[in-house]
Length: 264
Image (cartoon, rainbow, N blue to C red):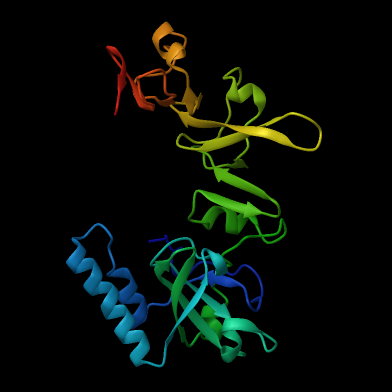
């Protein structure tokens, strides 16, 4: 479930119609959403989802289907608040002029089934709501940057990530950083796919990297690179996907104190 900024977040700007805001409503539906825990045993998890569905639909809510991650929803059980404008078209046209809550309830292929219901948002609460994003440069103010709860954010055409120092930096590493000839603030666990261009108009393939223990490591490696010791600079715990070699199948290998070990 996606994180929510704390209730009482300071004002950022006037409400923008048809844009998603963080859901900070502390009502019955909000409490039911918080009870949904994917880490609980499946019977408890399904019951919590069913309780939410029954409550919303009994109170004039509806289930609508959207393409995945529309409306700034990040994951199943995530929810947002939206003020629907007077000229809104499509699925949400029936709610023109109303505040609604949209909850990503379940997934169907490349779509998400969302519970939608009207909510009451007071002027006092409106002043405290935080825009969900993606943002323009002007919308991503210092206040928003400090309070934003996710580790990545889209600003204009660019994706930024929050570093271990708390700074927002580009999610795209430099070529020198990928060669580990310079350090960057992109956090461990990040991934990057570098395009290898064959001419000025297109590229032939992508080379995958992931960040581990402060180092950028290529996702794929050859059997020869593993057995020859060329990749022994990778710290213990680092993983690479080793390509098939003869009768030896492909699969993940992890660097251990004793050397490389297949996870197959």
